[in-house]
Length: 613
Image (cartoon, rainbow, N blue to C red; front, top):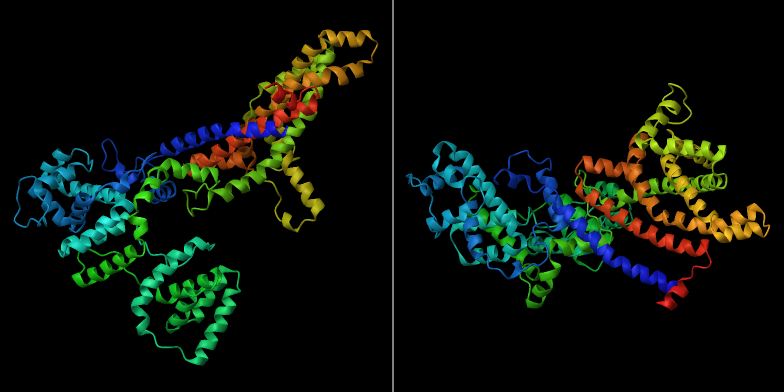
């Protein structure tokens, strides 16, 4: 059996590959950048309900700025894009309109300098930004202000598309040119390409060791410049600081740590820097970074305005150059790393790794909670319901089907079959509403709760009372969900049993004088159950699908309700995670069905099948 199970598990790998491909293309069909829809042909502002923030959040998680399957962008030269984008990003809005007037042939008096960018090449570059009706809008002076805004959006999107690939080219431009306009534009483009501040000043709510490198590098740049400005702390002050620091390191609550770091002072930076750069553990570095962030703020400027003076621009340039120097390997990989990134730094590779490791990213809805814990919480709610329904269906439906088959044509068969047909013909949503109306709302009866899994204040109940309360709330969803499935399985069991009782070996057993109970239970039942078990692999997926209706009706916060809410809210990350987990459950149920064959019929042996193979 072990070899069979291993072989079946290996056969699930191609299926898993197909599931990852399907999930990948589902994610690809999600609405794109709402900002791009404002300038693309046929697009309009507000066409997508996906917000810009949610899109950027999704793009970062799923590498939407990367190619689909092969990534050769690390080997491309983006010098031309960098120069054009830096020039265009350096201009105020009024200068952009003036530039467009000049490109349209009007040649206004105050046209901005091209800084080495020829007009014909610039015009060709602007056409490539995919702005709707480019030539028509360019010649229309009345619509030029709106056209100017769309072009600026197009430039922003082009810079964002350069992302990590363009960083080394922007840094190279800063090194080779002293032209203030290009330097200012390159700094602004760097901030756009990396979607904001690249410096990491502290850890996330749940500190992770992989965050340490970024935090230490950020404060290292600042400390290298500023440490000479801080005097050595007095001995008595150092004792107080050390005591406070040890207390906060031992404190598990983030809220209390944030409150406690207010006890430090700005001049305690030498002590905090020593703890951050020293050999302490993760908690020591975590507390140090929070204290520095609280008192120092975000000292490394990374962005400028078009009106900022050159001296401020040069400070920001120095910050970007220091940032790049600490991460050269990231933005300028060698040949071997480029070869690896060709296949690994893609949308599909990223999606496959995340799905296989059950890292579903974060929800696209505020506050952007991780999808994994949401799914796990919903599974813990739905799993008991599905198991109870499955047990109830088999315990009740199979005996009913067998009873109908044994008493074929008699009044018992006709009465049970009629009720089963009626139950099967009623849709789940109708039976759910009928159950709520009759047994929950109080119009007729009020035997069961309307929604939820627990009564208010159940935390104060004893274990016995809490269990009874839970069962009371589960009664409605379980009964409704089991109804249609029970009717289908009972009729299928009846048909399967009728096929068996008409076999020759059953007639022979009866002719030998065996009791009817022995004939049914020992000879007929096992063979009749084999087709019934085949349905087992279909019931769990069916229950997952049916639970959407039942959980919405009864307000049960399980997988069904989560799927419904995620689809309504267009939370594509959660929807994709639910689809992936459902596929895994289907594969597991198929394997479990195969194993049940051996338990039901000893004549079935995996070892014999393997030997025959």
